[in-house]
Length: 81
Image 1 (cartoon, rainbow, N blue to C red):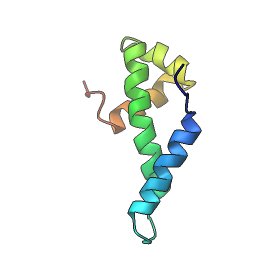
Image 2: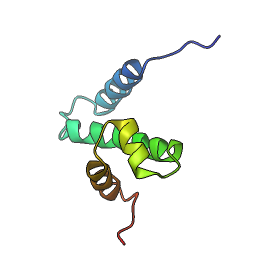
Image 3: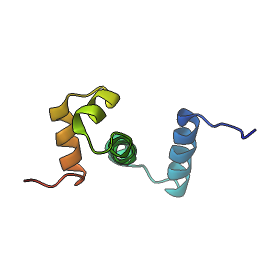
C-alpha cells in the first residue's frame, strides 16, 4: 500500500522548500501567492469533476455560484460572454 501524505504535509513541504530556495531573503506577498497556487488546481479539478456545472461545483466547494464565477474569472478559467 502507498504511503499517503496529507494535504497539510504536502503544503508544509512545499512552503519549506520555497523558503529555502529564497536563500535567506524575506518573502513578500506569500499568503496571496500560496492561496492562488492552491485555488487554481482546486477550481480546475472541481470543475472537471462537476462536468463544468457551476452550480454543482459551487456546492462541492461550499461557495455561492456568484463567488465561484468571480474566482473562475480571476483565474481566467471562464470567458466573459
